[in-house]
Amino acid sequence: MILEHVDIQIDPSKQAEFNEAIIRGLETVVSKSKGFRGYKVNHCVESPSRYLLMIYWDTLENHMVDFRESSLFTDWRAIVGPYFTKPPFMEHFELVGKST
Image (cartoon, rainbow, N blue to C red):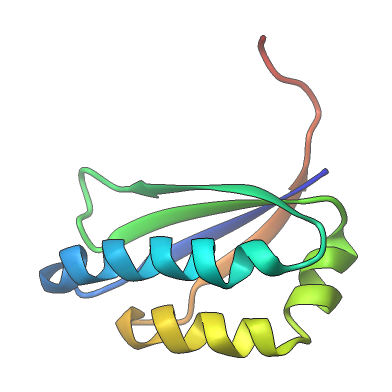
């Protein structure tokens, strides 16, 4: 399994709107993509403009090819992109260990 880790920054005055938009985009668009397994969205307490989005994929290809090269990615960015104050920073991680 692959964890997509995305650091997002928005205008904090639009927090309520963005909260709705990101969940709507994840539930109605991203979740339809091949290999999608779930997500978490966290809002930073100390930096109100900052969010951490974590999306779980079966494979790296599911994210980078099946999703990002599809019309779903365009639809997703149309929903959340207008809120970004700078391009999101994204990385991928593989699980090494976890607690039960």
